[in-house]
Every structure is written in structure tokens, then in C-alpha cells.
Image (cartoon, rainbow over all chains, first blue to last red; front, side, top):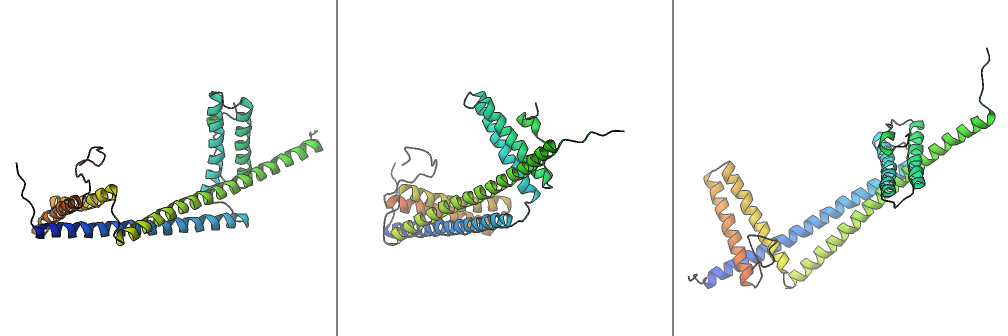
Length: 125
Length: 134
């Protein structure tokens, strides 16, 4: 089977299409990378401003308070899993669950509505 | 009737415990907000690194530097995506214009593949993960 050899004009057209497409590709990459930096900068500014606001006495939102509790509770669950695998002691697990409970009690005392998930961590068993 | 009042020590211990809980919760909140900021800063550093690479590659290309085969393939995939987009448009709402746009996008993708291959790039339009792609 033979394929038709492209003419010089066809080859030039193909090369021009490839060049244009390559330029578009690089421009698109550049635009996307710039947009990602803008988004990431805004996220840093928001996170920093929020940290400062709370440091200066602003209350956490209910969602933030839930995330704070969820974070310490996840740590307790991780220590629990490690204890099952023999990579942490029972004492470490109890310390982690007590810490999670302390955070929960503190948040509740501060007026946040934090559910008691002690059945998940086994803190009350 | 007599009432039992807690001892002074018990009251102090309870108060200390409650204050400790508040302090622990505030410390946890502080750590969460710091971690959230650190995560955002890490993401920013990643985005800035990606931008630096994009800028460097655009500069090199504009000065006549070569494309890598991966970049050449991505150029082809962008063209194929456009062909798929116009093809879908034609399938959903066929008009003379949509058929012509689909045909033009396909022809452009073919021309780009030919042009890149003529420039010596290994581009494959069937399977981007194939190790023996031509």
C-alpha cells in the first residue's frame, strides 16, 4: 500500500496548524497556571485573615468548631488504629481520646453545638 | 433538710478542669487555623512552581526550543478535545454549521498530527498511555 506524499503546500499548512496549536497549548497552560496562583493567593489571604480574626477574639463558626473537633477526633481514631496494630499503646489511645473529649467539652462550654461521638472513639466505654 | 455541698477542693478541681477544657479547645482551634493556612501556603507554592515551569517552557518555545513528546501529545489531545466537543454539538443539535465545524475540527486535528509528526514528534491519537506509541 502506498500513501500519497503531501505536497509542499500541504506540508506547510500542516506545520502552520501544528505551530498555532502549540502556541495555543502553551498560552492555555500559562493562563491556567496564572489563574491557579490567583486562586491559591486568595485562599492564603482568607486563611491568614481568619486565623488573625480568631486570635483577636472572633468566635469560630459552628462549622469551624465542628472541624476542630473532627480533627482531634480523627487523631484519636488514628492512634486507636495504631494501637490495634501494636504501633501505639493503650495509654496513648486513652490520652488521645481524653484530649478529644476535652476539646469537645471546651467547645460546648464555649457555646458551640458539638455532638457527642464518643461511641466512635470508645471514650466512654 | 440537709444538703451536701461539695468541698472547696472539689469545686476548685471542677473549675480547673473546665478551664483546662476551654484552653485545650482554644489551642485545638488555633492549631486547626494554622494548619489551614499552612495548607493554603503549600498549595500556593505548588501553583507558583507550576507557573514558573509554564513561563520557562513558553520562553524556551518562543526562542525556538523543541517541544517534548509529552507536550506534543497534549497539543494533539487539545485538538482532539475540540473535535469531540464539536462532534457532540453536531450529534445533539445537528445543523449544517455544526457538521461543518465538526469536519473542520477533525481536519485540523489531523493536520496538527501530521505537522507534529513531520517535525519528528512521536504522537499517538489512540492511546496516550501506550508505551510503544509511534
